[in-house]
Length: 290
Image (tube, rainbow, N blue to C red; front, side):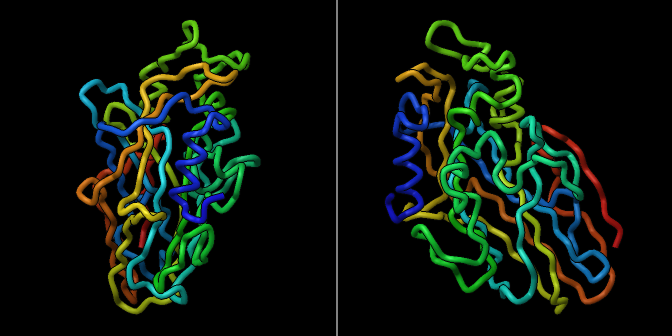
């Protein structure tokens, strides 16, 4: 396999082995952001855990373009790995719907990359993010980081997305001949179409050093490309005996990425994070008390 994460992703995504009908360059605008899922804006000894998500959406004049895949890395800029613990958070139930809780985890649920995008994770678990580690062309930074995150919707992960193939016959329910355009509700709830924010990746950070400081979370490229990347799609095609996306590769520019900053305080504290938080398809919020 190529030794750069971006090379691995593009090679797999462009090949018929992952069920992609076509890849081209192009033009819908994809946005990423990092959110704290409970609205917490301050970290203190009384509430040391941040439950976080990287969300994505597509802005397009047709409102019919979805996110089919992505690559990025997460960095807590300047935060020593000794100051806390990063981990993946539950994101998808066994049936592919979003896990709506904050704590606890049902049997068979998945962490990190959302289930509909977990095709590459099934090939190599490293694509679910390397926590403070190097590998696959990603080099660990001096700060807390999660590198080599890559999601792609293909084969059983694509067809297993809720509403895509409800009769489990291996063909999208929306198929007409060798093409399928997924219903708007599915595209919005699981692929970020129509400007609807969805959770792509969930993680948590548990702080153990409460020296006063600002946590600065942001996304960077996980490959030789200068920016995080995404694949977008509008339809599926049946090609080489498999259903796959007709996808477009796009670079997610710095102006289309919103990071997250939160204060660490040495005593009790509470606060509201940046903006109203959307839990992908789940739409659940919870406030913590400091």
